Amino acid sequence: MTRQEDGPATPLARPARLRPGSRVAVVAPSGPVPADRLEEGLAVLRDWGLEPVVGPHVRSTHPELDYLAGADADRAADLQAAWCDPSVEAVLCARGGFGAHRMADLVDWSAIRAAGPKVFVGYSDITVLHEAFALRAGFATLHGPMVATETFLKDAPTREHLRATLFEPETVRTLGLPSAGALVPGRAGGVLYGGCVSLLAADTGTPGGRSHARGNLLVIEDTGEEPYRLDGILTRLLRSGALAGVAGVACGSWQECGPYEKIRAVLADRLGPLGIPVVEELGFGHGTTALTIPLGLPAVLDAPADGGRCTLTVQVPALL
Image 1 (tube, rainbow, N blue to C red):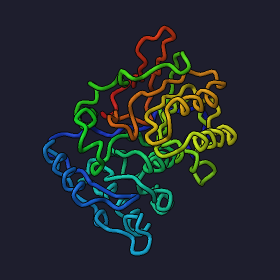
Image 2 (cartoon, rainbow, N blue to C red):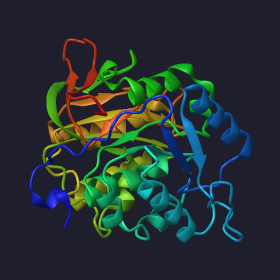
Image 3 (tube, rainbow, N blue to C red):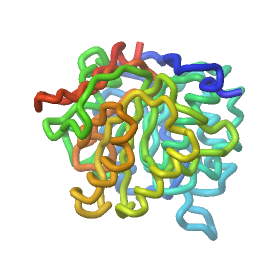
Image 4 (tube, rainbow, N blue to C red):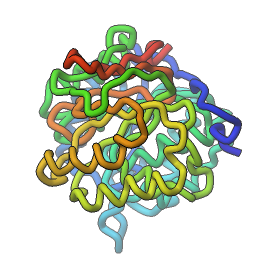
């Protein structure tokens, strides 16, 4: 039974914040990791005072399916071993790509749940695992930049926002870049969930998948999805009932998805009739600057009708 079948969303269990000396595991649940970017990202973590340890298969590539970082069972084993290692305080994804769907059901989620909450960071394809941690383990996670990705390595505000979230979460409770605007004005509260919208749609109808969104605030973004494909993705979520009861929607970046005015038209057409507040361009996802968004925690979405600043405010710090 998934948590959301019990009724409206409730906040999930938060992990402890990190401190200098914290041991953090880096894993690759999806695609292969460029070696130079991995080393550069590990250096950043060490500069933060963390002790990174690299999963056994992070540097692997599947012998036949070269879009995967090793075999499904190996990628799942790396994630589970890191989570169940009591010396590890956080599990950070190296990159997204493709493959999390393939290994998600190979993880022993009862063992994950028994090990308790830990910091988990990723986005893009990692959306599948955010949903699994929420629905199968009951743990809050962080939709944030990954260790071997260009945004993390090249954009200082992206890195600093993640660092602050990990070490000083009470300082970054109000989220939103100046670009944020009200696509549909309003104010709503709920428990945050979401990520890459195409992955949310792909997860619909799978074992343990989300069947509704009562009491939730949805955060969505994507990359490489043309307007007609985004239309189909949102339509599938609507028709399946997966968005039933959603309180509000915060949209992030739509990198390489076509002219933004066309994306905006699709968002307005598909989400506008829900009669809930919708904020656009909040500043997370595959964009040049990517804020870290806590998932599984209560938040308030503000989309003022008068053109005032649009924000997403988390009601408790992301980490204890």
